[in-house]
Image (cartoon, rainbow, N blue to C red):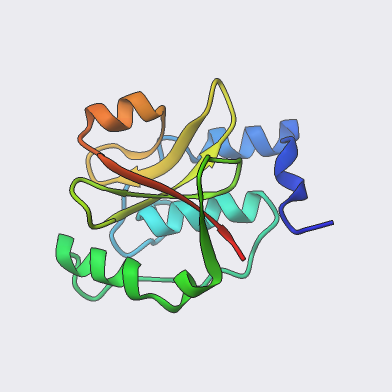
Length: 144
């Protein structure tokens, strides 16, 4: 059994905990009760039973710095790209080719991404809504 067999189905308790995250404020330093995108992703992973992700607070929060941090972080070496989303996978997003944002895919209500942005805080959005918000480059990733 792999670590990700737990993603096949979500318990009511997990769904409830995900629901409690939605609406939390955005915090660029990931201080509770707020989250930045990586912090919201880590909180979702913790609900799913994976607690070994490193904390990450970028020193420079410009778009270019976020993209470089996501692309070059050592954690990325532990993940592989997959063709279709599965519950718990990382969803990397960019408005151009460079990924500058991360969320967690959940197969709830037809599927969507739990993520945090400065405009909305923690939200659960469909891919259609993400594309309307100009997230064009979307890829999916699981630990190797």
